[in-house]
Length: 317
Image (cartoon, helix red, strand yellow):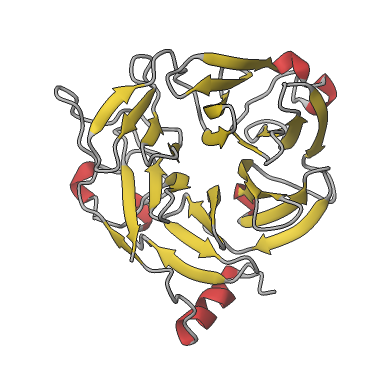
């Protein structure tokens, strides 16, 4: 398996493997509601429901999660949603479809209906203090396994992944900064359903790599290295989309090879910051990817780290 993305990128340029993994950026996709001039201060994520509606989190108590149709038209705000969902997902089960997200400042884990009704709340006190940094957590992302188990990462504090069952009962914690994990900002995670049994795939941001872990807490290995501060990950079909906060989205196949790279920004002053002004935005060129999601068709959505808020849509060709 090729681990280094610089080498892999060279090889994919020389021997293209893009195949059907080509995308076209959609200009001015989001249509804001009347009276709103910007999405809002974004340090959050994006997720897509089973009917194709796009949910976006912003740091605004009145419009914390905004919902847009597949055509980009604003539909509604999720009533009562917290304004500190740094990372969240939408997952459908036999009993319904739900939003799952940890609160970055609120130090708790929530399961909400798509309308915002609280279904489950897990306080930080459920996590043993030995896995915390100064008895606190800064929870940055989570995902749900096919059996309903919850995996939540403390990416801004201890770099531990915390495992709960579907009822919210604590099971165990793994990861951290010690060997063999050696994480430095395990920013976001996803359940990687491309494998049987499923694995945890994580973006180890400061180490510039993507890693795999087993759901029982064993370090499996590196998926790819040499990335531009990978910050987020989403799985669709054979692909893992990796949003890199230094201005790129890399698509990896199941074997860790580059299937394509999208939105590369070659202007250093525009990337890895939330203050890149609208005046220099370019369609399809990213600045600081902080969340990624696919719809059922394989179209890709990229949420930026941005004080004004920005969501890219890249349609699969």
